[in-house]
Length: 396
Image (cartoon, rainbow, N blue to C red; front, side):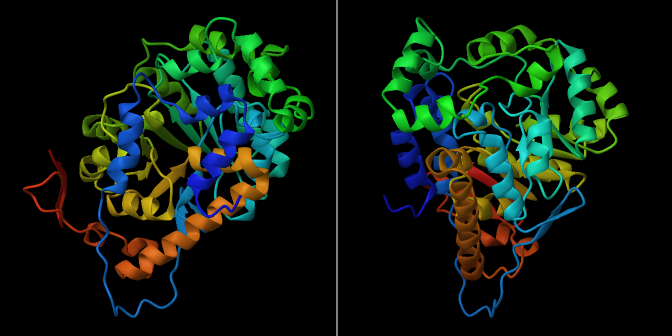
């Protein structure tokens, strides 16, 4: 199969993976309306093509939390990445390092911090949830700091897990789930050999290191369900803000008032995100939510965004809407599942190439020149985006 886009990698991943794993990464919450909007709202945002602008060489470099990066992009934290390729977190981390962008390790990764860290030639980022077990949180923070992590990504939009109907149908959860997963593995021999057998152990590496015994895949959903805390508030983050010496990023902000609260709290950055449409269906896409949040924070912190990003054009669109950087989630996991480390590196190369084309044809020589003037307004009498220098909104 000829691979020329993240869409191609998605199709390749679907063929290679057992259904329970493909649908776990591909699906969203409830009827998946927000999942679809994330992609559609970015796709429908028109770039403003300019000509004869003497662009010359395009500079894709940026700085995120004091760190020089080759692209304004980082790999997002994705749970169970190690189930998509043999020791998948290690492979993805190596690919990110080779392309000069950050890799964010999920706290519910297969590979523990100590296994991933040696694969890095640059500091990785680490993601954590607010959990009932504060001992695990403290242990994870200490181990992350010891491994050289200086940017902490705190996921705040998951006080309860979203209802993901696809998981019950696919075998990730639901009746006879373990038997269904086993049957699917048998019928996908390449994955069964490369990941199922050679990729062991299949556990939550960071959790197992803390508890002193393995937490296997069948315990994954149960452990998370027992430890998520719907009563969390800003006060629950204060002890982390006081004790964590590095940058602290809050992931899962969709409302301007929450963004302003993050500024008052002292966060170094936020991620405008709806968890890839995997939490509350029916909320705004990240693209729709981003402009108002960018206006609210006015450069008081580093503004990242994710959800729905499938190309370098989408990266440029989110930067034009006000983001300082973009997290890639599904886009890199599809490539990891299909082609391992090389696939992830190739996706990052595709993103860079597509960004160069988009920037050249919108007249931007550097990432900092991408702005709302890089976008064009749709006709206000028809559904679409209305763009001006000081305002962006979506007409219904």
